[in-house]
Image 1 (tube, rainbow, N blue to C red):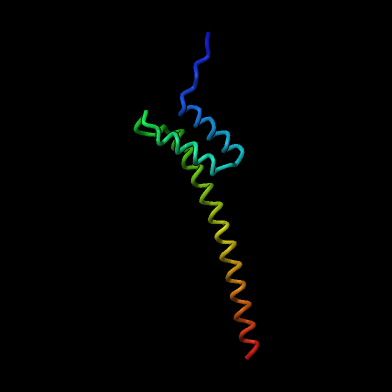
Image 2: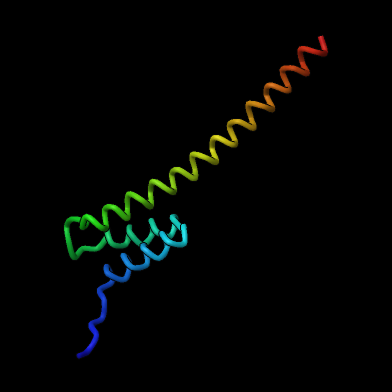
Length: 89
């Protein structure tokens, strides 16, 4: 019994699952985008949609956390500058 060669979509879904386990969500997005760009089908399967959702959720979550840190740091700096300005009067 010969093994069948997986389709490019199957390979990309497999790679998306691997990158999810490795928590490499940016790469996971890339693999799932390849699946969604495939001209072989019109809609993603439920599994593919879930992988896409997980990938984007985690990418956005990491960026949101980074943004909060940057914003908080800037606010602290502005607060210190305002305190220094008030104390010099």
